Length: 293
Image: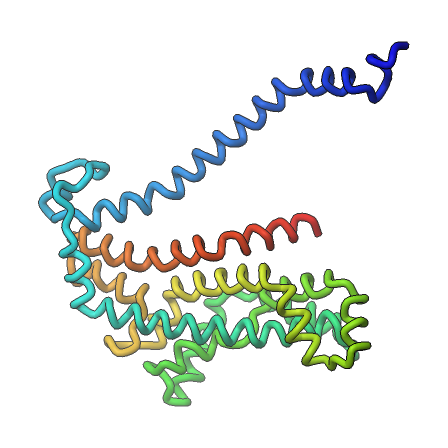
């Protein structure tokens, strides 16, 4: 057998590559086509919302929904901002910042305790706490309302943030798994250098967990920015009305004026899109790490 056709030779490798290239390209093309269709289905409503938001009511009524506005108008945005949406954006942003910061801080502490400290009943407590994810939010809605009503905290900023500001089971689970993947030798080296538990947490664990922390921050921001049911129940009036509730009220206040409703929807979506663009690298890194684990 010549060296050109010997097992493992360059020619044999090239021959096998050529044999699998055509089916592989077909499968790759099919996957990309499927992903493209999914992306179009996801992006199309956002594009339609933005196009409707910069149209006049006459253009929206007389032209196709996919027609470009000619000329575009920004009056819809100014109208909704003048009717309370601007304050709702500020309240929602403030609520989201407090909840995201509180959840990350407490989740880091709890996840480190479950991942790197030994205490009686650690595993049982962790799985019991994780089991609370099975409880639907509607089950706790009435008890939460009664608690805040007795404390006279309804229609206050505290009512918006306190039920969500502490660690969530989902965040603790992800951080615990991430912390357990950090080599113990690295922590041992830090202890030999005189680092205590707080130093290890602040200077070793948190810096190495930036991708997963960015992902958790983005998930928390999106969930709280879109939170509707509890703010609707816990607040009344315009003082502490959040963006989702304010947008829903526009459908009643401006009946069938979809250009105004789509302007409010577009204002609600833009911050989330910008956040994803900023943090997409960290999100992809955390997804890749999760897949490798």
